[in-house]
Length: 391
Image (cartoon, rainbow, N blue to C red; front, side, top):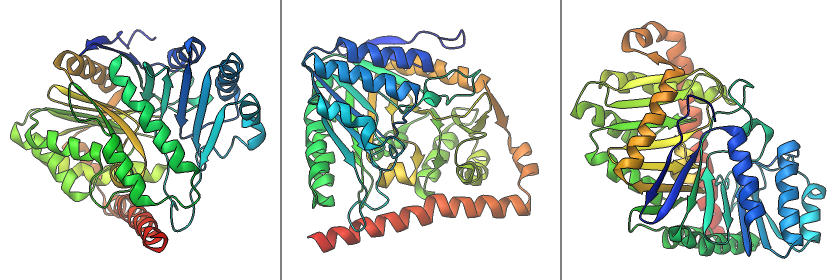
């Protein structure tokens, strides 16, 4: 862990929450979780690469299966396409269950399983935004992705067992219906207590996690967002600005990447700055390395998980977010945001006015249209058109 990252570990309602902000630390924690499993391992990731880290994690799962642990692995067919069948075959040969979440035209076309979850014995889980690849387990100095993981240990984790098994079974069905997936996401979401386990997916309206964020935003007087992809629709963008309007003075902070893997998403985010800055929000672009974190802190509530603040994460992709209602944890996460601000460049209203040339406004507007409108509408129509055909 770098000096800039204070150790964050808190007990909330009998559960231990430990932040994993650095790449090498996350990999060690993941391997430790796998090696310490006694009965079961349920693993779910969007991207899995056939590189040193990917091989190391696969081999740890292989050893677990060989010592009698029930191992189940679900990866996204698109995100994990670089890791071919021969790479995962040893797991199946050792008795592990393996499934690819494969998009199909008319049912799952453009639908992504964007969740990240490593669950051991129904008692310990690591969630967050990182994937299984060398680029997510390196350091800032190496130019790796900046991301966070969260280790949760305690009774609340048990609810993820049923969720994973139901999702795994759904993914195996060749004619599974979108409406069944929607029902699963709603039924398995936990919305009581201090820890809410919230899921997202292809919905006609806001998903369970997005509904929770919207509800918290209605009354929030302080908001911090770190989002690798920031392109909310007009309504949620306006709600974000309304938090700043309630009390001006920098109580809304939004951190987005200065550079990322899809440069159009940077332009889409910049398209939103004008609205937010005029309402008193503070905008920062992270410059230390590529930013992939997903974190939302609203008053005394924090959200950590796989979801960005864009239309895909709000309406389409399968997402997993943990809502933590605890002031001490929220305060600690806000200190983490302070550290990320220190590695960012502030975009003031005056600076943005200079950057907001006619050409840039056109470029940003096109990027926002592609990211927040066109991509969402096409995927939404294909998925729900396919649902009608199957039903």
